[in-house]
Length: 120
Image 1 (cartoon, one colour):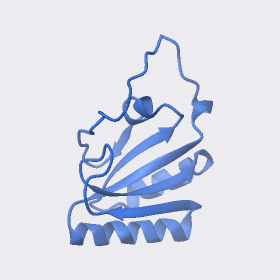
Image 2 (spheres, one colour):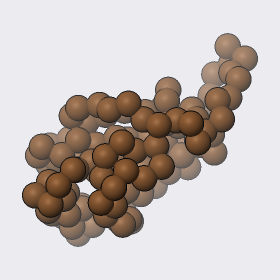
Image 3 (cartoon, one colour):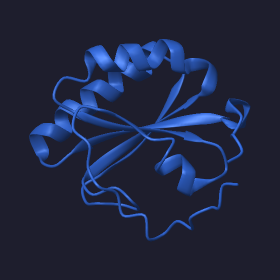
Image 4 (cartoon, one colour):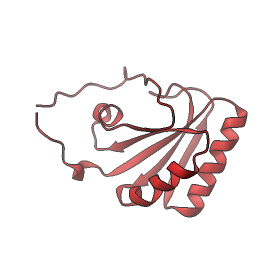
């Protein structure tokens, strides 16, 4: 099996998961605080499952260079919000499977929209 160099990571997504108005409000506060503190982009707050995500969610996008400061902050400030974290390498399947990490509870993703890649 060949290895994938970490230099393939161009950015990251952290998806805040929520499932009702109360938890969406908590996710919005986290996103606002993160935006005030870090160079990130905050996506839309989806009130239904979107793409591979099984719950309502909001995507936080950030550069690879921001990981070391942002993720420890998110670990300590996410409250009860679960977070799905993955790199962006250009291979969506690998990014959402072997590249995935969770803060809090994990959930099965709907990977039917991704094509598995063959790693040698």
